[in-house]
Length: 285
Image 1 (cartoon, rainbow, N blue to C red):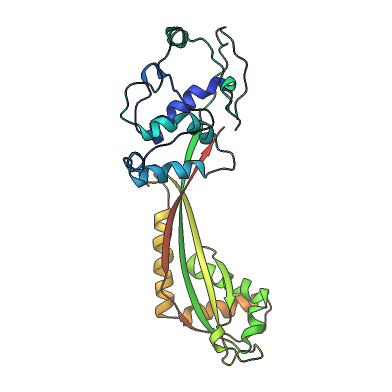
Image 2 (image 1 turned 30 degrees about the vertical axis):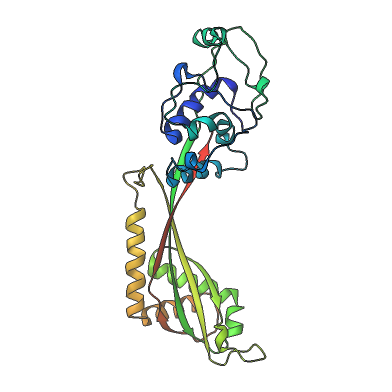
């Protein structure tokens, strides 16, 4: 995953603190079953809360080959046995001594993919410091709504990309942020030939707002305007819902500017629906 062997110690310490919520084993000697082969009871699995596993899954789902994937192979025993003080296997004094004196031990000899090296008992050279993997959390807020429009030809309207672009431009002027827009002909109003029985279309639109947050969900940048922008969009959609003629005026102007000859009336605007999710990614610099 791009990590050099001499960066692994810092990466493992960070992963341990962030996800395992327990101290490293005595002497920072981690033991593992090569290939992540093990068996355990459901009681042992349920000793950890579901949120604990959800957080681990997010770290492992951030990339096609996340660095956390390799660290997890070494950490499985400690994931399910957070309170264990003794090591799973007895260590010889030679291993303990070599670890405490900083001798280099090859992880590649254990069959772990993602890291290659050659076993040696010579002290590793001191390379230039490199940053450990960085965990980035992005809060994604989506504000969704729709507008019902009265038009002459619903099918032709939804097939007209210039009209859809003009509608997005009109909304941008009302909301002060550009949304993603799609046009739909209400299927319940179509006849057998696929033509609309009533002259109306539904314009669906979504405003997406992203901001970087910390583990508690608070913005990393204290000057972030994400929350204020969400509130502003919600307020302006509510205003348009109470007075659809405002959007009709903006849309008429946008159509004229785009040289689209079409008569459209905004019949209604739906209340906004807001959803939030936090996307976690592990990055190496």
